[in-house]
Image 1 (cartoon, rainbow, N blue to C red):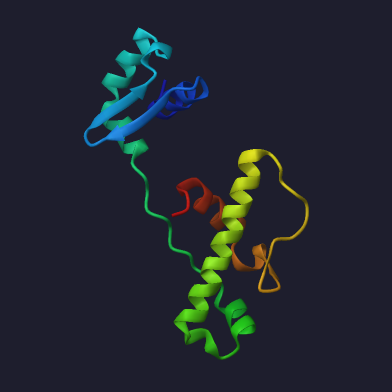
Image 2 (cartoon, helix red, strand yellow):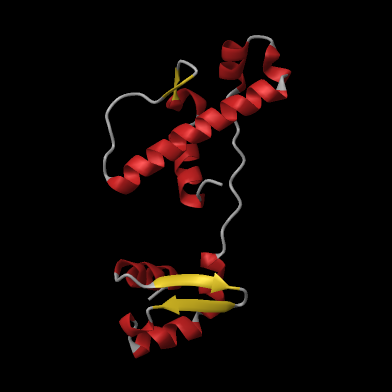
Length: 133
């Protein structure tokens, strides 16, 4: 079993794995079998790497859409930063809906534009996989 599969299996059972410096925290240990403990020890470095938070991917917005929304002020870093925060908030909202299973139909609008105009589905998936800051 791969380290990632082992992590998923344990988490489904309610086991919390966390990185504690160069140590691996496992709670409650009573829910982990001796074979799983041996696998955790054998793959400790890989598991610690998987538990290390990854930096958020850079958010690259479509320049054409930015120009249409901001006009000539695409070079205004404050305005662009504000839109980036709004786009990330929409992705966070979508992430919460996915986590709770309460995805609502309809467009997620940011400054009058659908989220799909700001980010591709691949970008949204990449951000959700890595996690938001």
